Image (cartoon, rainbow, N blue to C red; front, top):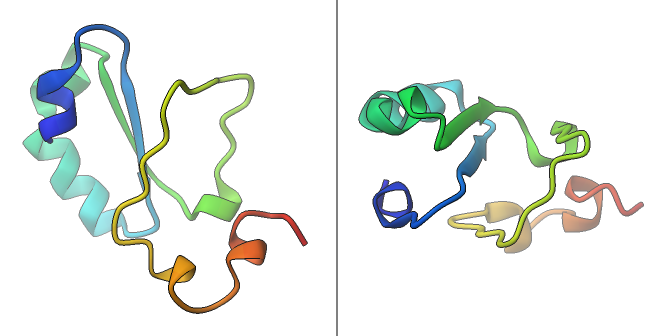
Length: 78
């Protein structure tokens, strides 16, 4: 993951509803996972629970729900 390679500090948390994609990303970034600079979770956005974790930046890539469907439902704003 290019983002992992460019981290100057901190960490990345990545989510995807596809367990297959998360497994592939975890394998590709095993070095970053081992160093605790990357965490990958198989979860839909609306079901994600980040607890008290806070983020400085949020990226959304290839998120079809924003092109079609009900983004308000996915974001839990309904």
